Length: 358
Image (tube, rainbow, N blue to C red):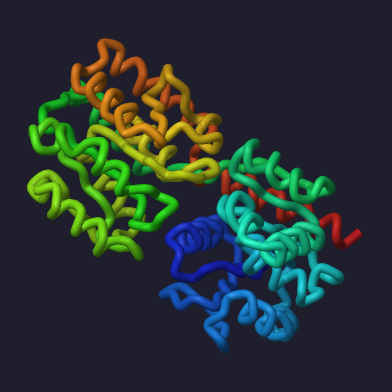
């Protein structure tokens, strides 16, 4: 089976997905406007305006599919590569499996009528749509009620589950300051400034240290806020890491924290649950298929006191901590094993190719 993968070549998710497909014996051609080390065919960014660049690239991928003779087209992100595929007309001759990633459904359609039209057009011209949560699937159907959705979670690597075994052997020891990781880069949707406002006193008191990614559009402003609050000693940053290195890195932390304002089924949350980290997340619909008050802490991101209280409670170390972490591990193992879920995706592709040949 040969897959034409249209996705952001700079995205860790796209690269990870590409590698897993290849490990399963699938021949993959990654085509991307964005540069990346594993991109097979780099499309030209003609104008720098995404919508126009996707439109201009549509006829080019028609020629690519002729040369590559792929069996199926797999665009990721509805209003980007999904829109490009729809414009190309390739859905007339090849099966199209569209992956919706979250913000393309939850955020993009709200920006303008043009954004929404692009999303709807992509959904209409896809034979099958993969979403990573029931919530995202329901949102897709609100936009286009004839969409054919299938829920396949993203998931965690085997190495993340190995982290849990090591923590369990060590008895899930917690010592102050607790090590907290926020694996969300500094963009408005991830709301990292809220975390500083809520937890600055606990950081000053050396109850916790928090590690953030060292990149993102808002990084400079974030660092200025940290300087202003005089909590530099309790804030750390990490550089981009390969999947293998990140899975090793996350094992050193006690708590996973996210204040994201919008999300579907967060891969980073599943990884944290698989690795034995205690999850504390903003109370948004996208996390509800993984989180409730019985397996971590939910907070109101309109109330800094809500997040602070969640941490004050956790600092006492819950008496049922090991039981809670074990429940999370089992849930991640049941529904969030990345290799198993991508195998399911490959099976879906094979069915689509077979049906297209009838």
